[in-house]
Amino acid sequence: MSGKRPPVEGREGATGAQRASGNAVPQELLRDLLRLKFRTKHLVSDQLQGAYTSIFRGQGLSFSEVRGYQPGDDVRWIDWNVSARMSDAFVKVFVEERELTVMIVVDLSQSTAFGTRRAAKAWVAAEVAALCAFSATNNNDQVGLILATDVVEKILPPKKGEKQVMRVVREIIGHKPQYQGTNLKLALETLVQVTKRRSVAFLISDFFAGGFERALALASAKHDVIPVMIVDPRDEELPDVGLASFQDLETGEEVLVDTSSKRVRQHYQDTMRGFRQERERLFKRLALDVAVVRTEESVVGPLRKLFERRAKRRRR
Image (cartoon, rainbow, N blue to C red; front, side):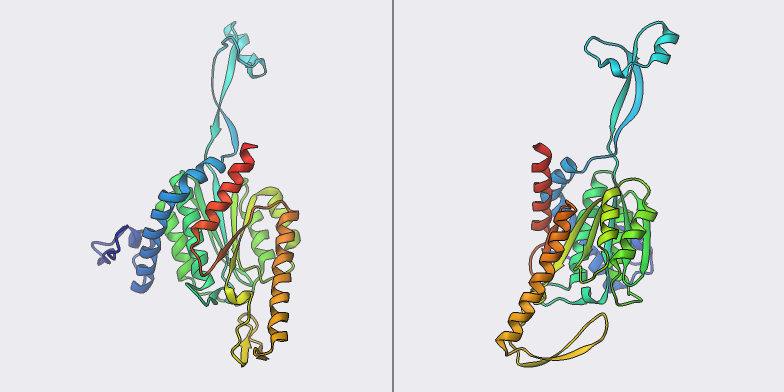
């Protein structure tokens, strides 16, 4: 992939990304969108596409045609009505229905604006979403989007094509949330309500929320839900910076903490570790595949490992 920045053209010569996401895209957002597009498309084609295609399948078999019976055909597929009319044996032919619906559910609560290393959680979520969306569209699958905070702030119905992928990514990186909190329960209930056919649903969040367990169980009974947990190093370890004021990004509440205290730092680490283990037990109990993506690392590795685990299980 070339390090050369793609051209940003005017209205008459708009780039494909600009046409795909509307002509009124701010230049800074357009640059971010183009950068993310070229990086993720390259990564998908090089590292993820084959794995995606092999493990995410369509909705089963659909009827194609009837043909004359041949020795070795399964008698269960004989079409008795056609056979009676034609005075000969005919069997039904089925083909695999390849097309999938991929829904990307993204938590854009205020806690996802946080990030201390390579990028904020919201940007990492956009990278994950772009990789999943490009993998899907390269396989001729439909892609849809649900953005959530305290409320569901945006829904994009599933569609095919790169134009839809660019709109999905643009909505994630360009959306300015109206609310700050997290309501994963509502996001999952909305997924069930708006997506009628079984889909693959990537649920991207830091999962700093509660009360969504039953909604997750119900959603995973209907859809193939894949939690993608975004983790920042500061979610797990408190630095020693002396007396410091910390603010809850979702509630605005501030608290003064003596980070020089080993006991305080250990309590924080134990609490956050316990929180994460609780989430992992929930996912395991529901038999959900999980990808843990860290803000200081590439997003490709965890997704590739996820796909490899699913492929290995499918071969058993």
